[in-house]
Image (cartoon, rainbow, N blue to C red; front, side, top):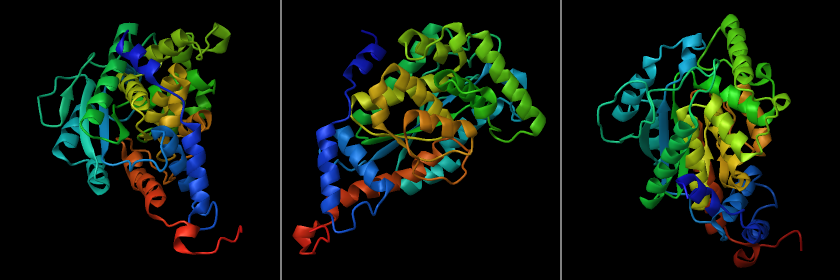
Length: 362
């Protein structure tokens, strides 16, 4: 068995009995039923993840930032030079990025994984050198990755999740870094959801109207070049096609995040998704193992239009909507205290019976 096969075979559906017990417990707590809204749903989801009620606290949390470069950058889809990927990896390692500040606030560890940066990175504490390739090929001209490269990047994600969980993490958070990766994300979203490029392609780190229209055209060309439409006989629910889509228009960090999600699900550990890059990677993970969707929590709704389409396809409700479009794991980190609070309620809030409070339902 490959690491991917082994991981997928270990994924089980969320525990429905534990979820039912969690919902019943919520209804007995000293508050009006449903008064905590989406937080009640989060607590129930995490009970299904762990298979127990109340679910364990999702702490400590671990953020993994997967970094990689993209050949499609040559098409002029981003105003940022490609070397910014390398520079931002150094910034993460020095503790100077927004993700570092948010991780410190959430009490989460930060691990940076070089899965495909286009330059050689010096060894540094907190950096895992797992480079599969020096970036991807130009997805608008043909496959971004070979099948072997995509499989290797998936395995990097699986390995990273396993190591963090073995190190004590009880909640994983997805992070990413890669100039031009919103272009690859849009192409993945089109492939897995059937949406049109104009509907899901956003402005990324900030582009003008002309560049935005050009970016939409690049995404369309990528889908055509790689034959990823239903009219081509493409069907993402087939495992071979799901993997082909990931290799054809995804990035090395997308594949790694997909593996990361799958390994979290196999270990029955919740994973908080960040924005559009994580969401598009989750589409790949769920295409390979549909039960993996139950192990994901949508940290936030990105300002990128493709993210709303992604969350709708995955059936996930975002916890916050702050018009973020940074990536790095920032939205997932902001959501982690909310996830923790939802679970803490299950452990610490009294029931009507134990507190001697009259339940209006009686």
